[in-house]
Image 1 (cartoon, rainbow, N blue to C red):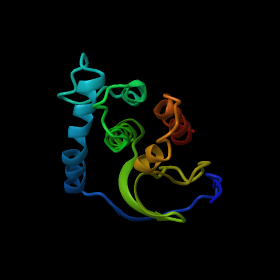
Image 2: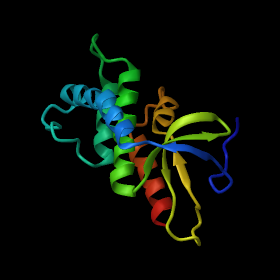
Image 3: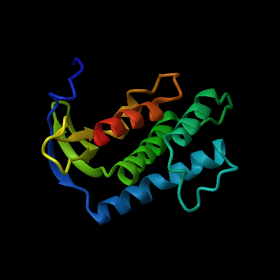
Image 4: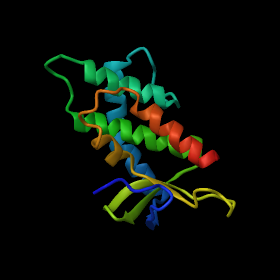
Length: 158
């Protein structure tokens, strides 16, 4: 399927995640963040949360790319940890919300933003962090989190 112009993209929010749903996401994915951080950034204490910067997530993913050890974690663990981290960044720094959405690609767990003002270039935004990282499985560029964070920040803040 070809790329969709973000101004023409549409989706339907099936439901926003509840507090309980978000707590379950944390129980599922936070241990993966901690495991990845202890391997690739052991000098940074993530016991109370990870640094709220996309560069930190790119550090974890980039370190995994460069890791040549035999016990290197599978990409699925990296994808899950970094995608969850991205979602948390978008939630805390851009005011996006976790939701289950439906679009032309199907149903997915996404981050959603809806503006307060009606006269905005983007009426609403949806971003699926797990799908985004999965699509970058073979990408050697280590700045994938910085790039998407800046793009969404620009879209949200206008």
